[in-house]
Image 1 (cartoon, helix red, strand yellow):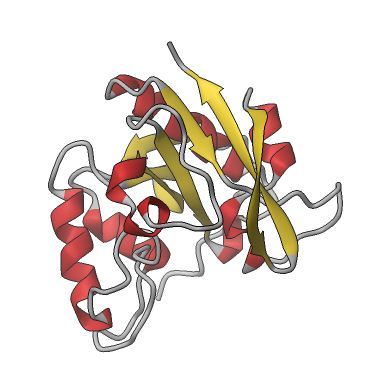
Image 2 (cartoon, rainbow, N blue to C red):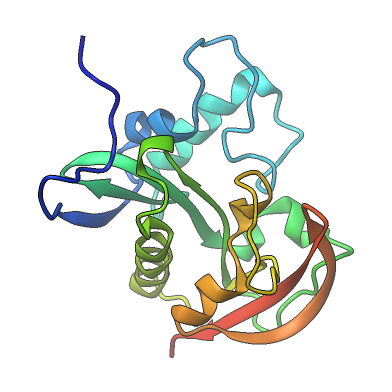
Length: 199
């Protein structure tokens, strides 16, 4: 039986980010559940939470089979290690109807809404790779701008559950700028609109 996957410490690994198109199995390895009947988000909370829990894997399988796909995956020495949901804002029903996060002036804005890094790979900067790869993916598909709605943690620690939206510092390091406040919160921390113009 193979050991648990984790970030290698005996060599400098190759890290690359790839679109999730035609990579549903890798996506499922990061966000899915071992039991096929287990309930879970499957990265549907922002897309369309009305989809019944047990139908979400097939919904996301279809999304992974269709350009531009639902996001990007980060690989460490070809082992999938993390996920970022990046897509046009209009495809996220929860954002279109949001009362807490203001809509951008450009309706074609893409949004990075969620990050997941597998347990054995955390604390190695992979969220930075994911965000950079997400921005490139959006640019490759004609995006004019990318937004994120991370927590403003004030340089403090954010728990794994609350930090799925990222932090202001993460987005600032990727060249995003504060664009607006929101009425949203994650883990009790305020969320901020961070924006990066691509063209």
